[in-house]
Image (cartoon, rainbow, N blue to C red; front, side, top):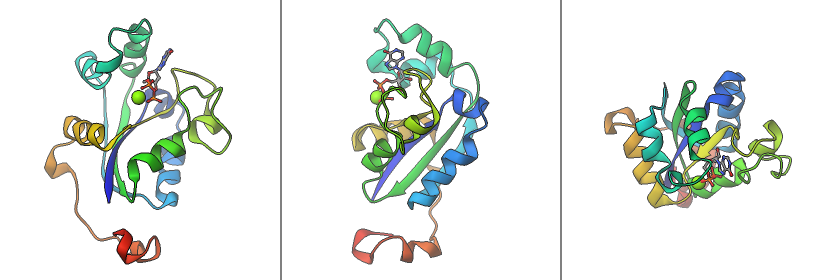
Length: 154
Ligand code: IDP
Ligand code: MG
């Protein structure tokens, strides 16, 4: 069982796609254990995108990610990190295949709607950055029994 950090980026919120994106995650069978709306500050952007801060595209990326509210979520499920990365598709919406979120909703390299942690290690760090422990809810979902077998976790 894994957890991953997801952001619906400002383009997704402004385009009123929050419901559709959340629905895709829920329909896939992921369990939402944390959910909130916030504004990414320049400081948080530098922390979140530390690996990209020195790249030429970073100033525009920071401008974009801080330009409006984001929705932050923690989703839980078997292989949640890779499941969400596969659902999102490649970074550039123009290259992302139909059926992926970036492929179905966008054509941009920057405005690609969604962030998903790229490894379990990154997920642990990012979850701790965006959520306090008490903001992550432990609960039993009665549908879990019909989402995967008992030896795959609930
Ligand atoms: P990822 O979100 O698919 O993991 P990364 O390469 O980690 O992609 O880049 C982080 C974010 O930075 C991307 O999701 C996108 O919003 C933006 N980005 C990545 N590469 C470029 C670029 O070449 N130009 C502009 N923005 C970019
Ligand atoms: Mg990345």
